[in-house]
Each structure stands twice: as C-alpha cells, then as structure tokens.
Image: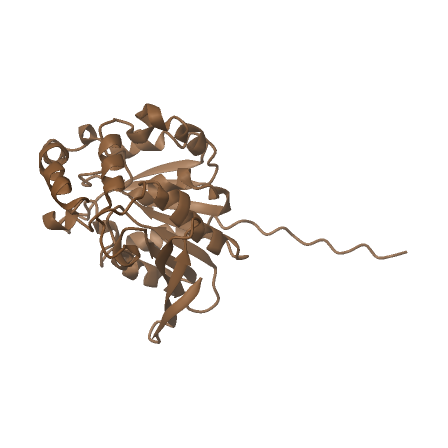
Length: 308
C-alpha cells in the first residue's frame, strides 16, 4: 500500500492519509486511513453501501479515530476515486467488492496485532459472509442491511422500486452501457455487472440465497462465527426490519443481535442514509462501545520455569 496524501487535523489529534490499496486481484483502489488520536485501541474497517463513496463516511471515521481507533475507508472498484475513466465497457461482478476489495483491506488491517472491527452499511453487512478471511474480524456492526426484495418494503417504496427496475433503469442502462444512477440523483454510477447482479437478486425474497446459481453462498455465511449486530431503522424504506431479518437468516451460526432503531420523536428521519449523517454521534458511540466490548481477551503470560 502506497501513501499518496497526508492531512493533519490538529484540533482532533487525528492524522488522515489518502492511500492506494491493491485489491486481491491487483485492481488499484483508493482508500483513506484515519489514524487514532493517542494510543490505538484497535483497527476498524468501514464497508460502505452500494453506490456510496467513502467520503460520505468521513464524519463517522473521524469520530471513531477520536475514540482511539485506526479507521480505513475505501471506494470499491468502479466507484468514486476507484472508478476508471469511463464505466462503459468496464467489467466486474458485484461481489468482487467483497471477494477482492474488502478482502484486501482485511488482509492489510488483520496483519496488525490490534483487534480488527467491522462497521458495514447496507452492502457492507452483506459482505461479511462473503469474505474469505472473515475469521480475522473480532466483531461486526452493520446498519441498513436487507434482502433488497421490494416485497419487504413499504407499499409506496415497493412500487417505486419495481418501476425503477422494470421501466426506468433498463433504457438508461441500454443507452449508457452502465447504471447511470447519478441521473436520478440516487447515488454513484455503477458498472453494468453490478446492475445485472443486483437486479437479479432483488427479485428474490431472500436475495441471492434464493438464486439457484448462488447455492454456494449458504455455506460461506454459515461459516461465520464472529459476533454481529444488525441494526436498521424502522423508517428505512429499503431495508426495514423484516427485510433485514430475511437476509440475516444466512448468518445461521454467528452470535447475532438484531436491533431496531427509532428516529427521535420530532427529530429528523433516519431512513437508509441517516445512520452516518451529522447528528448521529449518540448512535456512533453505542456502536463503538459495543465493538470495543468484544475485544479479544489477551492470554495471561505464564512465567518460564526456572531451570534446575
């Protein structure tokens, strides 16, 4: 990994570095490291949502660094600063983000002696079960992760989602050669492979677990033993609690906690993106407290026997 830019935030005692991170298959990714203020208590990898650039998570990353964690965020291939000059003709599969990109980030942070924690948003909660190295994770906390099927969504959102997949996006994709999501103001543009995979799996109540061509993922998810929290807001239109519950059944052997979050009375809605917006610091503190409570116990060192 090569450092490309360093920025200091002296008022917080945090050092921020823009770095290049080769994925497992060599694809060049752009990531950002937030170095802990003071002595580090652990490393934290933030796995973002589909079509959301890493800069969206900056406030959370700085907050966690202030709490004593080294944080890494990244743009997945095809997104943000890790995108090619044009997405037209750019080939990748949706799950490369887990198999190749996030796996490389876990390799990097997991090589350190510090415990490695995971915070996921939407796709970031899916990716845990796809990682070839999830055993390096000490604890995971994911927000807004659901099965993607419109049938789990509120009625109005379900109708909009079905229209999006069936009528709106197909002509846009045919015209552009990729999922030009930015034309709709809904997120970053996405490669054609991501669009095709995502559309296919969102037809199923249990996402890719119901896809006959993805039968192998059940075993991958069943192998996860890491303590996990899956929290979602009751007003999240894309991943309400019942959508989350349908998806996390795949983590059949993980110590799993489900949490339903409620927007403050008279306050701003949380929705699908509000978990990481300014003003969410109390939620962030709860997340970090839970993660740090799951730090691996250090084994007591026994004195060497005295030679006779």
